[in-house]
Length: 388
Image (cartoon, rainbow, N blue to C red; front, side, top):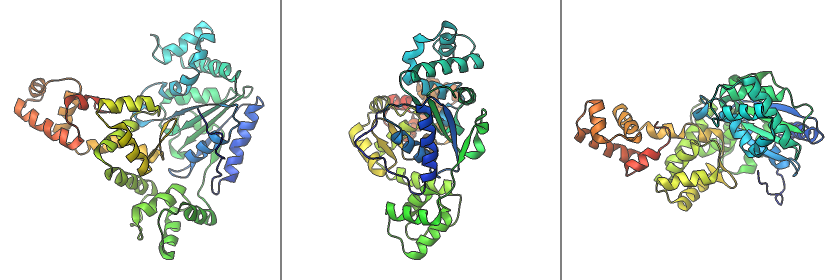
């Protein structure tokens, strides 16, 4: 990860205690005493912000590697583990042959069954080899969405890095921990105090609120930082009726997405399907959909939903969540069947035969699909995410 060393590390409002715990973990790892910590809490409570903070506050000599769980990859064994290990795969040739082969099998580079125990040992050897050059900080966000094989491998690693210069920090929702992560040392992240909530609200200055609306917002947000920032944008001067904080924040993100130009919305959908955040991959996919990348990315960045720097990052996991599903909600069941067939390469005549329709009906449905998805060709449809 490339860090901006010129910019000072900004403290998080009301999170001095949590920040110190994380930095203490990093300092111990720098001295060769590895450790792990799982940040636990509700959506929007500030777990991702704490991860971002520790990344930028860690000493410059640390090599920071990242991974994040993804709803789109939770059925793919070792997907999150692969994401974490990619930056250090240059060390693969230093491993003994059995361990090297175990990782190659786990990552789909060789055939054969993956032995979870051997994969865990091989990953430990791989990270230890990388940490021999520079201390490692492993940052894993959205751990509750990880595939089970990766979660088990990470738990295996976390129990065996005590003598290595490696720090591992996870962020996850309390109720959804899998693969043994619930048994690892944890740090509950709770709501901000009333004083800190008021300070954050004043610092953000998202909109001007009168006293009664501000007090109601503070009461309903219950110290949730993301709610304090996003709910004023969603509700204006009068907050909507009480509903779960997470769903209301997500609706706010959806409303902001709906206001974007068509190409900017398509760019968001593509970004949501790629957990790596690699800009070069995103730009390449966008160009296949004939998206004007500079204009679309500028519109998305201006909305505050994503940040584009060394990585393409959503402002919060709730802003990423199921972006692609929302656009496909516009399609009827018949249109969704046709879209999937065409995306797989079928001609209108082939689709008509399979679905017992006339070719004219299929073509009419395709015109409707193109209009609803904001695209103009079969090639673009084949490039849309999650139609397989």
